[in-house]
Image (cartoon, rainbow, N blue to C red; front, side, top):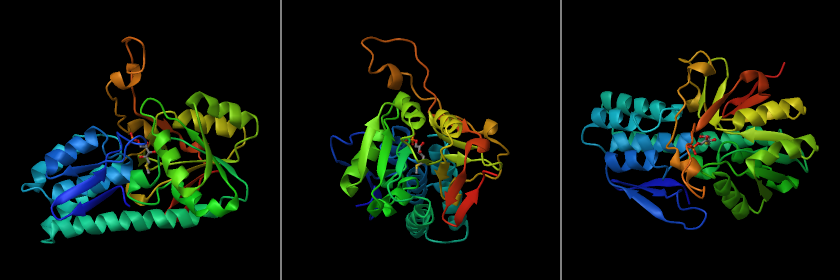
Length: 304
Ligand code: MRU
């Protein structure tokens, strides 16, 4: 089962807000529904929201207007903007927009499969791998980015440390996927990652990405930066896995990437009463902390 697919003119998606408690399908019948699904995180993860937006434009009666609506949903993931431009371009060239969106979705899955093949080679027998957020099949339709190499290395007796990823707890989505794959794992509080790294209990880190600048600075889920700094301090390889659709060559470095700030209630929602809160959804990991970026075309080595 994929996390998002088309049935006629309807776009179906696993409602990721309800997981891991409930597996329910959300149906989007028009671009407004798709925009709602992206904004409210029914669908999330850069490649998955890219595919959702591609379909949102494709099923709209006014694709240009739909493109503007969809672009205003979430600012950070490059895939969203890239996917929209691909479909608008296909329409301009007289192609069938829905078929172009189908092709886009199929290609994303294939890119992730290849990321898995390249990344799997980095994983040695018995490795304990730490990941942050959910960069699995849910976030990409199938395989995942960070989770693709992990899936493909599952016979190597591996173990995965899963950062719970406050405030939205995407780590539980990762745990849900790993459970189904039969891969040993443990969810940890975000604050515990450094503890396990310092104790020599983490052999490598693999995370996904939302946007990668020209100089290879990476925007990813809030907390990624801290993990990268602590990994470097402890001599632990830190890899980013992402398709080339996440690379934004128009952005020179990470400081120019727009960081989404979400509603503070996602943070204070679990408090006994309302306090003031801030809720940046992403942070920037400078390229100097990244060992390499695993793409569908191979690994970009960054650590000199
Ligand atoms: O806010 P989210 O859940 O959409 O953020 C997702 C992430 O940060 C992922 O790590 C990233 O999109 C890569 S998904 C393959």
